Image (cartoon, rainbow, N blue to C red; front, side, top):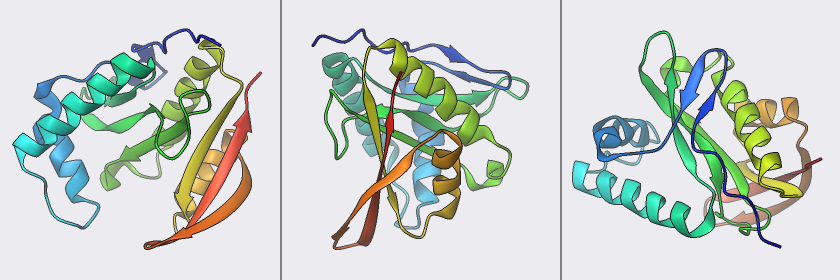
Length: 166
């Protein structure tokens, strides 16, 4: 079944999400550094952005940078990816700077992406979350995701959640 491409311009009460460009490289590398496994180079981050844009052109889905409307600052990203799932039933993914955690931004952005996913004609989304990531579980619970199964890899347990779309 062919799907409508995902919208690349999403706006919520407090956030805007739009396409990536190379100007995000410096900010994105600092976000990736918060993961605790080093800071990627600007060149590597530009490559990550370019690869994401190429994948988006191929799949019709995308991760989108998130900016706060009032402040205009980049705070993370949210969107749909193939990830560990499929283009027909993609994963919702998000990552925000720790300094903005606890303000409901991830839920707000993910809700907009969920609506955009519905508009593509898809019937189901997935999310995979490490078992220690309680904040992500709370976001997904608010969006109606339910635990499906658990797998284990070299980094530990990975919880798979799913959400049927209307």
